[in-house]
Image (cartoon, rainbow, N blue to C red; front, side):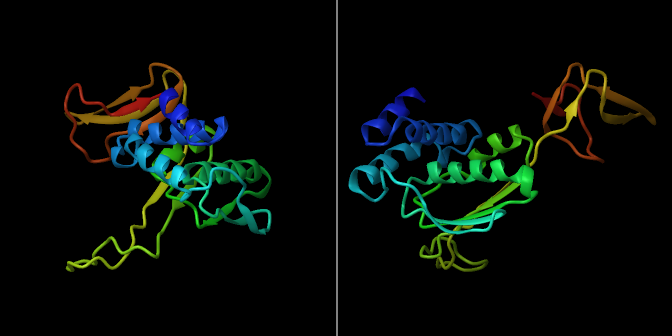
Length: 209
């Protein structure tokens, strides 16, 4: 991450923006979305050098109603401007309950899932989506020619907090119910099974962090 941060700084970004860019791309790789991870660093550096991404400046506020705001990013680096909008949403949600942000003319915003950990860590629920209506990259069902743009969506919610000894899953074996309990305090990071599934010995069922 330090190396990619240094590359973004060399391309003209200040240290805070460079750090955000590097962190989002690294997070995408760590989540397994390698198509939108560190391999996107090179093209983002090119956009900065060639002027396709703005190095400095702030998004223009087109509307702000407290629980709803709309920005024109005018091609500021996507990961930085989206992170900035998420931070604004989290600052307001305690008072407003629900906050919605829309951004137009952002540069490519990379992997939507990479923005989710900071939201979950703060204890919030969010849905993120984006669209590039000027692109035709996706074919309709049964078709060969691309007609639509990609419209990815990400949803995030914090895991439940659990205490040592708290029941996590109930397994039925030989008509007997057996509770699996947490061996330590933590937060449920992932559940790898659902009701009705057949599981094997040694299989990972629940992850705590």
